Figure 1: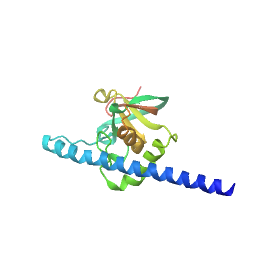
Figure 2 (figure 1 turned 30 degrees about the vertical axis):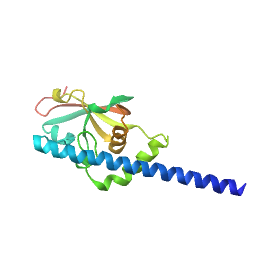
Figure 3 (figure 1 turned 90 degrees about the vertical axis):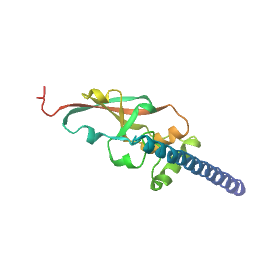
Figure 4 (figure 1 turned 180 degrees about the vertical axis):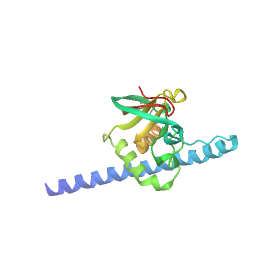
Amino acid sequence: MKVMIIKSLAVTHKTREYHQVQAASLFEQFRQQNSLGEWLRRLCGVTGQLIYLPDVLTGYAITYREVEGSRQVAIAQIRGSLNGRIRDFTADFRPRQTHTQARWINIASARTSGKSLPLVQLALIVGVESLKGTYFVEDGHHRISVARALGDQHINARIVTIHVRPNNTPSV
């Protein structure tokens, strides 16, 4: 019995190690593709950066937030962030920095080994026409990046709608 437990632990360790190695390889491939993309974007004068919502909402006031629930969202519609992760990921969620690598690999390893991960949390802005249909990440940048690297087109998310109005408009 003791030998079977030790063998089982050894197999579990090898499987975990296998997923870690696969995830590290995926990180490097995905990040290297980013290097070429960054070079091409600079050449064309495009930033390739996530939209930072606080910058866009200058001149707007948040009137209220409502939790919509969860649903599947096209990853292509997720274009920005509510926090400072805009320097960590490109607009298509490729890692820009190596300091995100360990967390990214752990999430990719968990995904490829079949573990369920928490829903990402996204915000949808209502009241700014130019942001219609655009989602912003509140929580889950790494999970979105891993999903994109694995070829997912959609991701399950908890949605919060943020209603805004221009600062010079009286509240209703």
